[in-house]
Amino acid sequence: MGKIEVLHPGLYSSLQDLGRHNFLKYGVPQSGVMDSYAAKKANLILSNSEAAPVLEITQLGPKLKFSEPTQLAICGAYLNPKINESVVRNNRIISLEKGDVLSFGKRVIGCRAYIAIVGGFISKKVLGSYSWYNGITKFEMLKKGSTIKYSSAERSLHSLNATVKVKDEYLNENVIQVFPGPEYELLSSFQKKVLMESAFHIDINNNRMAIQIKEPLDNDLDPVITGPVLPGTLQLTPSGKLIVLMRDCQTTGGYPRVLQLSENGINTIAQKVIGDQILFKLIEIK
Amino acid sequence: MKHKYPQIKPMGDRAILIEFQPEINEKSLNKLLSFKEIIEKELIEDKVEVINTYHSLLIVYVSTIENIYDKVFALKELVSKANIGKNINSQIFHIPVCYDEEFGLDLELISMENNLKIPDIIQLHTTPIYTVYFTGFLPGFLYLGGLDEKLQISRKSSPRMKVEKGAVGIGEKQTGIYPKTSPGGWQIIGNSPMTFFDKNRNPPCIISSGDKVKFYSVSKSQYFQISEEIKVNNFQLKREKYHG
Image (cartoon, rainbow over all chains, first blue to last red; front, side, top):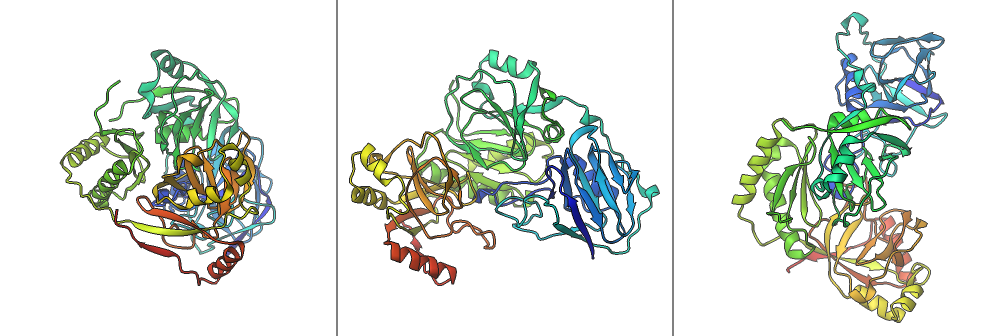
């Protein structure tokens, strides 16, 4: 069994899979990777199951030392990954030798990158998922000196095998696909126009639970009876703050739910950082 | 704007929302839970999770849904034809609460604001049979209906940074128990030694939508005794079948 030693934890690094299902009724958040597209691709490159846990890293990557030879794939944000002193690329099979150190440099684009490992990280499933969440799993995020185990079974993939096509254009995309939310029709035509036609920016408060939008939207809606919310629900607070709920969000909420991001929209906004510009675009459901 | 209920529509590309008349009462809850059971049975192959709040059902899929309008149409058919039963299987749970001033941090404040003696507050809080509408906000946090109007009080203007696990609070028309230590803005009147969410238990919560809760007052020494019994798994929680 291989062991990863955390030399530096990075800004916010956690193990995630495709989320915790069937426990919403007990008020347990879904959690799971913020950008499911990138996480699935990283696993696919290594022929892992797409639901295998991956390491989600945020803006400032960690520094990790690997005790046994293995292979990795990194997808999503481009954070200048290096093995020892050599630059490596995203969306490729990366082979590591015993004692190699993976580190990251300056962020180029995107917010979150996903590290998948051949054979998968070894961790404990809690309530049907590997996803770390405070109060549910033992760990919430990587800390300096902590370790993660991985399977070091002989399994050498050739980089030639990598025929997985990864489309990274969405990292530059500022159009966020949305559907009308349950309370969309309560908005005035002016509010709808502002919401759908203005440019908005990502605010300083953004994490795995929610991404706040800098520009407020004038709000005179009555509060609603507490109802279900989901990752991707855009809530409008009494003060006019727009808040996009993300993967670690609560299961219910009492603010009007004006928009609902598509899965693609959630993945796209998950790659935005403070100050990035976004536009909401209504899409038709096929 | 007039609506015809129930409204059934997609909520994004991974969920379908069914909304009934926006009201909070037991009759609506029972209707909701009957539909929930029917839908869960019908969609068992789809591996969905169906959750309810006061007047909504949300059907959550594991991944994006193909042909969402076919699903919505099928649900409309199902809901319109459904023959909903009257009987919801529910249980009543008797929950010990210690209303000692050590735990009841805001008892005096409520006493002054609402012009009630502390024993009256305890009496008014332990008399009703509360209905569990759903679990949300935090894992294991029960939304309870049935608080006596005389106990209604607004939340704290600035929330406490730390409310203890088991704290029993009142916020506006609601009462509830904090399942874990967390920040919170409710007025705190006591503490329950019970565990309302345990990730190592399956299911992690013993109380769910449609169940009933009744509080009973325990002294500080009984509180600590029950805590000990819970620790060694020797506490007999009083629960029985509830006949409405």
